[in-house]
Length: 289
Image (cartoon, rainbow, N blue to C red; front, side, top):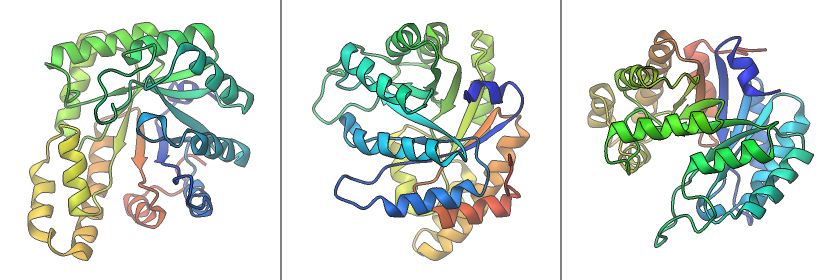
């Protein structure tokens, strides 16, 4: 099933996982997926590493999700190091596995790289190529409610989203954004620029101080005062921080839903127990079963 077909009917609910490294066992992630399936997600997206590392494990995980018959896999795919022939070969393999939803991105450049070292420098070109060669794919594109950290200004960032839409993207998925008001302003700018695609919001649970600060800063995102208060009050006590962070994440989910989002996407960090606590507290229990 294509994700756009669901978005045209209702709000979607989904998860993101990442594959283990090649030298690590895959069984823990399989167990995590089984736990996540109990919440009835519409899809589970699977990343792979910077520079295309772990692509093999990505295929393995996406195949396992598809074979489970419990939800749809959405594979990540980047411009990094990929020629046109590489893209065709990879997407033919995904097609054979019955995977027809893909998040197409430029991807983070590995340290020391200048450009993608592939045939496409930006996601809009990759999206257009996929749409031309594999029109059956439902293509998601990444967006940044507080502006891509490398974009010179918001105007150019919104323009690139218009390029992605016009190149064939079916919907947008946000990178992490803790500031719900910033998200609302972002959507207003999208619609003013005639970007009409549905927007699925990615939520990063606040489970530990250092990762939250690191990921927020590296993405150029703000830390709202409510989250800053959690960091300031509980930052030196990991257990208390996790408890308060889960409560903060529940409130954030409710605020996003109140804002009328098209979809809710949880970055699980492969931590099914903590994610389960948050979803149950938020009242999400088999939401779309």
